[in-house]
Length: 334
Ligand code: NDP
Image 1 (cartoon, rainbow, N blue to C red):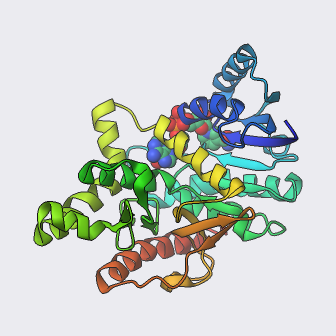
Image 2 (image 1 turned 45 degrees about the vertical axis):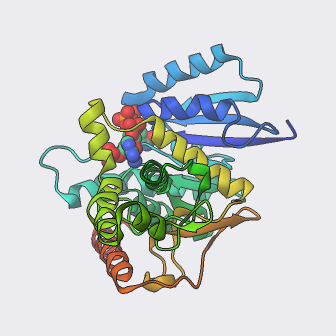
């Protein structure tokens, strides 16, 4: 390995953390030329889980793994961090109001933002997985005034990958032939999975769907099956599996960081990044866009034509993000 990266994972004792750690240590995220030092952050109740994972990491004798540190102190966890995966969050419990949820997460992501501001490496990259991911990223960023807002992102790659999976099945093409699918907006049920610019083996996806099903049926499939299925896939997984998605969430987080660091090649992907006002998304919101990565920076794909159907759906999801921002602002969390 030529370089060493410090990777911090919060909620490292949880399910997604357990899946992520071994893949990162195996080099799947940063590649075979980068050794990793892992820092596992947990809350006191989660420490035993994280400590157990650390023992198994030792037992795996990963050639790229240089060190593992388990802590419940955010300052220690984010000291020198290059890549931070913020997985641990407060899930919505029974009878919990949205304000309570946002307040509980403000108590987690505010101090983490401060710790990142205090100790992170100058090239730090942050991806938030824990929900409500977009707004948690906004909170962390607001507490890290010395770190560019562009370094705080939220994960919509799982939604993106879910969309690829659905299209690949519907068109009977390998996922590698699909390009330029977009997830817009919030990582929530209001997200908008958009195929208006997508191609399959070089041909327009909408056209190919029309050929397979007929034009009206293709429109209906997109609006009534594809979009809701992708947006509600998390609930479907819970119903079938009996617990929430874990390995696919970890896969998506790895894809997100790998593409951010090493760049995108075939077309664009989706990530929630800070808005520059593009496509009517208010400046400063962390919202999902079509993005490419070059030189270690995300860039929003510009100049796409957006029809009325798409704009209405983008606006609806963005309205939810605006409400979340207003709510955390009213709570004094940003
Ligand atoms: P998981 O590891 O399964 O999930 C972690 C978070 O990821 C959840 O909040 C979940 O939000 C979110 N998430 C986002 N997208 C997805 C997706 N597609 N599928 C599943 N989850 C998704 O949860 P565990 O309960 O197993 O582990 C959480 C750990 O975090 C615990 O060990 C806890 O102690 C720790 N924690 C650590 C904190 C810290 O380090 N400061 C703070 C808070 C908790 P949702 O539930 O909304 O799906």
